[in-house]
Image (cartoon, rainbow, N blue to C red):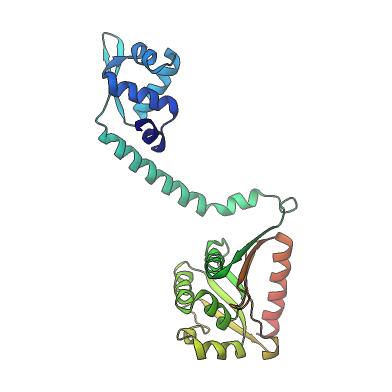
Length: 257
């Protein structure tokens, strides 16, 4: 039981064996601890100093001989807290550096990736994924009426708040027909207008081009969210496909500016 807990805290199997040996035997020299832990002296030396760096044990030198002893087991809690904090910092640094990792990938050898999601929770996941973009401008063919009905009007409003807080600007192509439908069914729809404060610019295509599916383009990703009727969503990662979709979007954006 104790061994499993120590492993879950991040100690290796050899560190676990040595730490338990220390708990059972108290202050001892390297030779004794290594033997009782089933390790050779050289490995025991390395493991003891690893535990020392983790702040779980102390070292004392008596007449030229190194002795090691465990600290209060409460130090384990501090060690786990420190490890969790370091992992959170590493996660934040890696997330902030995603562009560097992406730059290392050869777009000519990267294979397209398609993920399918079913139902409302899947649609919400795909929508939220747009806020992981490295690009700070999201391009979108957007039907407010259909997407808010699918993910939920309150949820879409909350997503909008998070988009703004995250510093993402939305450039959206919509149809006035779909906007009229949204206003009749969604109390939040009135806010989704061109607004510098909400980092949003809208351009309209003719009503005969109204579409029930919403598309978001960012980085090399295409997020597809259907209407509630068909109830599916897609995440497509493709340098070529998304590049083409962005060009089509930009042409329409200029045409209806």
